[in-house]
Length: 99
Image (cartoon, rainbow, N blue to C red):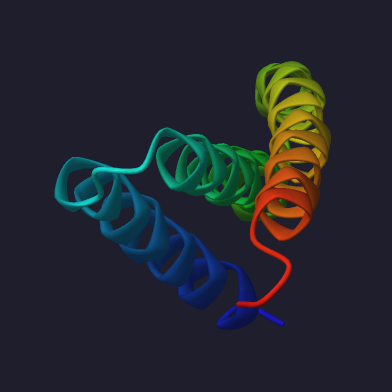
């Protein structure tokens, strides 16, 4: 259990950076907004898992409070990112029915 959260933290931050770089490479606005939604999802996973890992590592009242705040912020980022990515993915499919 002690290895899962650090791996998720590293993978999510790497994916966040990947999607942010992909935004810079893309010329299409819909694709940029889709990648931005995916980046927000990865950032949410990063913050969420960091908050959980914070509490599991220290198990104090302060780390519990910090962990809860991180979990709430990370969860909000994750949900928002998924909604944005889903919306722009559907818009891209609507505008490009052949691809």
